[in-house]
Length: 225
Image: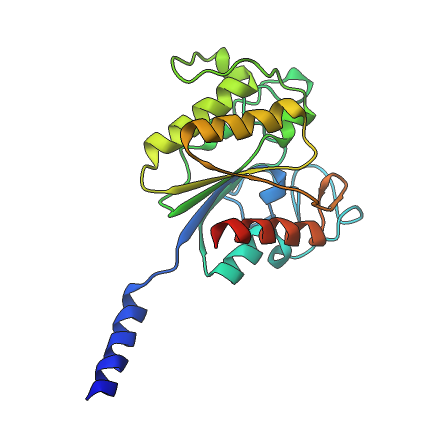
């Protein structure tokens, strides 16, 4: 009788416990052609962003990406991967061009209905030398959002407001400018968001290699567990 009860209990738990769903708001580091949404987003890995990267990076299978490794090892499912190669958090991109069509703060409203959101940005803001600007936590104007600091503040405020029951984890790349690294840490602390500062991520052609993807996954797992 007792054995039958426990078997029924296991069956009940198996039916009602579902895998956590994750969404990613990212740039090239989180892309893989055919696995981003919307599907017109530019992808760097196996991608459509203007060139064959296979000669420069050994990540040649989606299962080698940090997010697929994480899903496999933590039992997660992808809700939406809204990553766009070359995108900045703010509206100012490379060559001071207007990136408002692809910026993180443009795409942050399209993340589905996840349990966890991973934000992995700031790399292109640093590389493109986007204006840094000042910390601003309310009253944002469109002009403000062409600078990194107010845009990053706005993004974290928006995510907290619009995904109130979702765990938000920010991932800060290694080897970025002091301004970008400091901003991400301070703003995440202000909004009570977990900030994972990456270190020792091997890169090829400026992007995580297989070894680098494994390092990202492991550093995230250490926080999640």
